Amino acid sequence: MSTTATTTTLFPFSISPLKFYPPHNHHHFKASNLTPAITPALRLQAMGPGDLGDFGARDPFPAEIESGFAEKVLGNVDTEHKILIPTVSALSLSQKECTTISPLQDPMSKDDAQKLLRKVLGWRLLDEEGGLKLQCLWKLRDFKCGVELVNRIYKATESCGHFPNVHLEQPNQVRAELWTASLGGLSLNDFIVAAKIDEIKTSDLVPKKRVWA
Image (cartoon, rainbow, N blue to C red; front, side):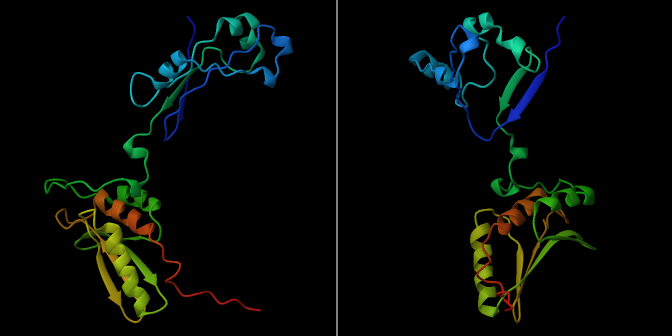
């Protein structure tokens, strides 16, 4: 009984494979001999049974078997290749949407929060008496830039239905805090909103670095 190895490749998009037919005589096989076999039947096969396309390796053609190509390459000829669409958990936090939180749900543990903290930039974890919170600070050029950043944060999070507490502190600091009040701690929604805030452009608001001659 032969053992079949499995190689899994993850792509964030659909791939429709093109099939190439090499000539019968493999000794004179050149790159210029590769001829795409684009036929109506192939186009139909590439579409696959669903909307995601035709995924996986194909069986070798008779001409390929006759040439003995499998004996002249490294690797297991029985290897099965699969191309999978990424699950929601594989997507960036900023691409996810906030979900309704049940009051019966437990708040996120500190260990889980510290793992997700690696996926957001500039945020720190606060372990306060009322529960865990996320906090981020921005030092800006002036008070006007602080007002502009507050507006950008609002625009980035208005569709989430889950909002940070934003404080405009004179003379030039903005402080944002995130937590899920109904849980008395953190939920995934807090990290999703933090990731969306991370994508806000701030380079035109922060103090310019001095260039020394």
